[in-house]
Image 1 (tube, rainbow, N blue to C red):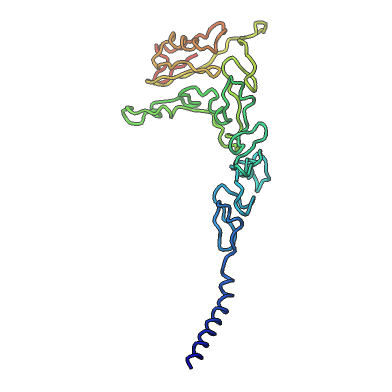
Image 2 (image 1 turned 90 degrees about the vertical axis):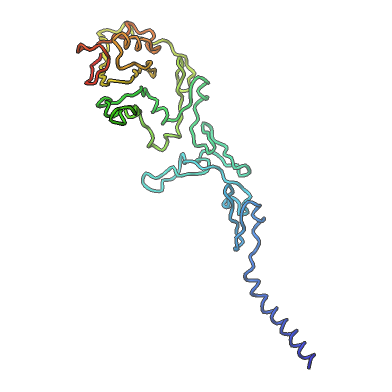
Length: 288
């Protein structure tokens, strides 16, 4: 009787193991390829989930790297006015999958080849700036406002005008909406140099003495202020700060001190009417 019980237990155990094996086999995951190269996580389906910086599309075992993304210089639009989607190396370079770095096409640079390089690095005689930066630097002057002048109403931050915000009177040229505002770069040449790569020397410029029927150019300016300073600009060069209580001679000297007026004859003459002694008054002074 005892032997029969033991045999029954042994047979039952064998049956249990035999019946359990199919179930275990169906739930056990298959190892991921190359153990995901140590660059990813193996999912229960035997598929690698690559860590950031590594590409499943390029290699299912996560052995190859991604390259930096940038706005595509050329691609297919996905909708009206929807293009320049992000792409590896901005579609202007080749991705080195071993290093994760872009090898950019000629004239393109940046980690994602996202910038148009300045020609010849501006020949070492200028600055390489984006279209957005160049627009903002286009003769911005200081404290200038296109319409309405700049009054204490805009400058004063409190009733007693003890706190002032001169930035309210500043204006710059804005070029930020176009997609290439931070992608296109160009040279801003140093004084005395010109050309697309700043490789050309410039000569002193002046009026053609052989031209006829000319008259002196007259610039009109209204200064409406009772405190502070302002500047005037000519050919990207600005004067030293001019006080609102400056005299005719003070303003004249400040303008004629500009090196951009070199060779200008006769020099600039300044005058104003109204019987006031200062360049600016609260109600506004017309200067020419």
